[in-house]
Length: 120
Ligand SMILES: NC(=O)c1ccc[n+]([C@@H]2O[C@H](COP(=O)([O-])OP(=O)(O)OC[C@H]3O[C@@H](n4cnc5c(N)ncnc54)[C@H](O)[C@@H]3O)[C@@H](O)[C@H]2O)c1
Image 1 (cartoon, rainbow, N blue to C red):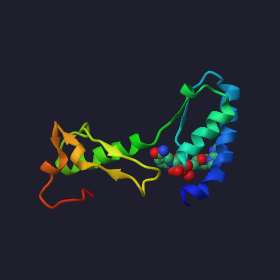
Image 2: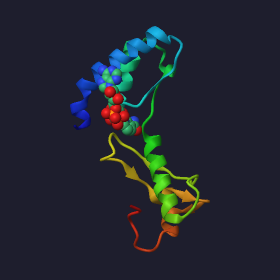
Image 3: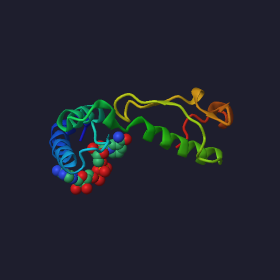
Image 4: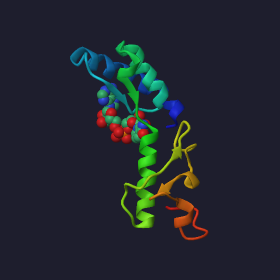
């Protein structure tokens, strides 16, 4: 299913789950993961009635963590490698920025073998 196909299915699920969470944990903070993320954050925000600082979406940080992991594997270093990435909407549109990603302050393209433009 595409993110667009998921909207109505996941809207109903997120609405229902949000209402249950609010009923049993009225002081909680909601961290939304379900896709499409921005839309589902709004669903949780709307049906929880929580203030905006208690409804948080988790998305791009996962892609950055994946990028760190693959680069650490390719460079044989700790996965605490520093990376930057740009995420726009879906992983299909996700765009890694290797020139702005560093390991111990060194840009990633300078560390990878010449001509290697794919880590995995
Ligand atoms: N934001 C991100 O970085 C990110 C990453 C991975 C997945 N996702 C999204 O997270 C969501 C879950 O992904 P997944 O891979 O864990 O899917 P999954 O299919 O493995 O798990 C979904 C779970 O939801 C349960 N479920 C279904 N309908 C329900 C309902 N009405 N009430 C309560 N539980 C219900 C199912 O039983 C299942 O256990 C998807 O929307 C996916 O697109 C987001």
